[in-house]
Amino acid sequence: REAALKLAERQLEEAKRAAPALFAEPGDLFTFHTCYSDGEQCTIKYVGRNTTPPRKVEFRGTYKDNRFSPEIGWLIFHNAGGYTPINVCNRGLRDTIGAWPIAQYSHYDEKEMKGDTLCIPPEMCGDLKAWKGYGYDSDY
Image 1 (spheres, rainbow, N blue to C red):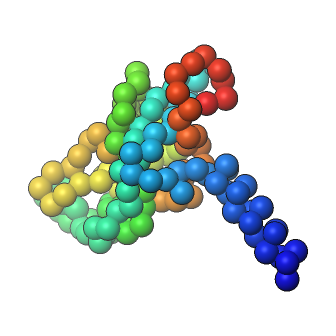
Image 2: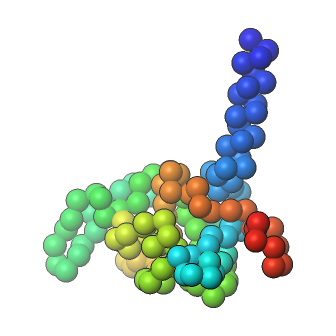
């Protein structure tokens, strides 16, 4: 039993290192490397978990099913600076992690989509790394 507990503790620590966004607190910063050839880095801020139930989103006058809406529990991020905002359409974060279509992965309220936010399921957070400050080291 003690060995199983130690194994579980080690696995939890490994999970925190492998996917730190899953253990984030609001305001924590994360970086990602884009698909650009130079691996350009962008910084995003964790906002919290989505609490808005999935809803139908009007698209060109028709309503689509819930696949065009973030799910409860998905992680919400906001632009925190850098050269590449969340919604860059060519090799930015959305391309890097496959967060398309925009409506499915954007956090919004009833009146408008919020283009500077990203709402993604936990399984898409693996490429996000905890921000360790400015510098030129390739491991942050």
